[in-house]
Length: 254
Image (cartoon, rainbow, N blue to C red; front, side, top):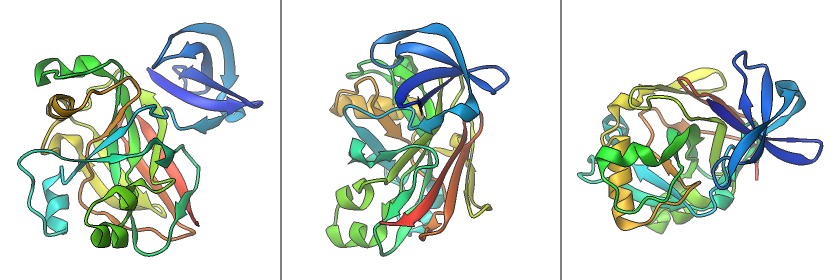
């Protein structure tokens, strides 16, 4: 089931994409926080403006160096345990919203994102997927100069517009083996599969929830594969994940 969040006539709504992917079935309520029911109302996909399918009320937990080839391309070792950092919810934008390039050297990083659906504290890998609401695509946009100079990643990966999410949350998919591709101006730059994650999703949830409580609407960015590269104002970057869709964002000067 593909759940989207969108605006129409000044109202923000959630909807389920119908089987033909031509209409949204409008929902009453918030699927992540308050439950929902279908209203019977439908609206064509062209009549709405897609928004980020989730704006975390708490946090975005991101994982670094979780594909071996990506670690290697930067000359880094693969960490024995997941390397975590946080991004603020103010970094989130949705499909087709512009990435505001802050200047300097800025990279795209296409990733699979996990959306948490239940409070998760010290869960085990064996039951970790019970706490997942669904999955979406993400772009962990990174300012490399700040990342190098600051010695930590808060500013470099947390600036406004540095976390595009979308286009939808897919709730019924096996995320253990999904193709992931990033294109810049239509040219393929990243082409990999989530089967190559060093630390798979259940292990990530176990590890993270042992340190911090995960709340409904929290997002985990699972790491980027090899092939990251620069973006500049005027570029269009697309992250496509099998079974989820294409997250497309233009790049503009901040």
